[in-house]
Length: 336
Image (cartoon, rainbow, N blue to C red; front, side, top):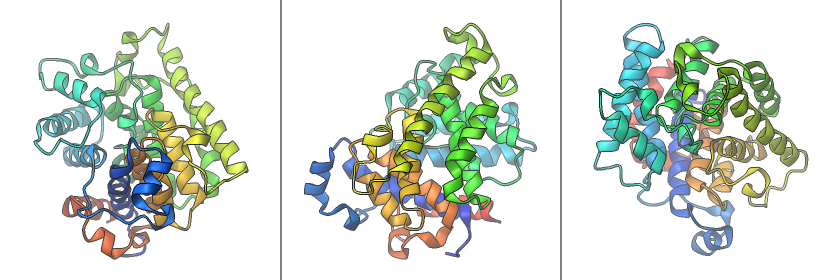
């Protein structure tokens, strides 16, 4: 695989992180070290099975390709194929990798085609399931910033309707795109903070409709601001962690365990930014953590692959990752 190929690098990195973190999810760091040995030597499991994180990323990717084949990207072109892809994932016999309850509940409701997607959305959930799968929206070329932002929020809202899930998904897609476009890793926290401030009071009605009315917020602006403020708060923790980096510490101690969307973004990003030129080490750091290891490592891998391209990953790992053909096909479509 070539040195650039940022879409392929990001998708493969996401899947590799997911597979590396799958066996360590729900374990604390001492238990992981006892099971896997020194964290800097963790090897990819055999077979290299992924979780619902990669499965849902592929579902979003396939839905997105269908939407783009139909012309311009809007809520009207994106929602039907992504909804179908999420429901197909929910019905699949391979959906047996400890998926989150929010995704399962929302997809069950989405499977009733007479139900509006906004009535299926779990408005109280800001679980990381929204942003662990959003990387394709950072990788597909040719979108306007408004399309990328709106689509990232809508793909989240189909399952996780909490404003923080929407904002964290938007920021994750923004980060992946910025890295693919050549942003330096050290610039990223500042770029994300500026994006969050710029978006803080923007409610994307053309993408989200009246979703906000299902919340307790007095206005769409207040609904949006609540989510972006959560993300700005965790970016403060990220800045503090990077100001005094401890590469041997459990990253979850600095920026959170990652079960919720804004912490998954920050801790996945922290692992990448601690090792911006050592992508495999970044995955291992995320996988050897006390939190949602597979989602943290899959985000770290998406960021590292977007920055460094497909050549970042060991050939013997990429050769045996589950769903390899699908990952490479999507990557090739978006590398071109």
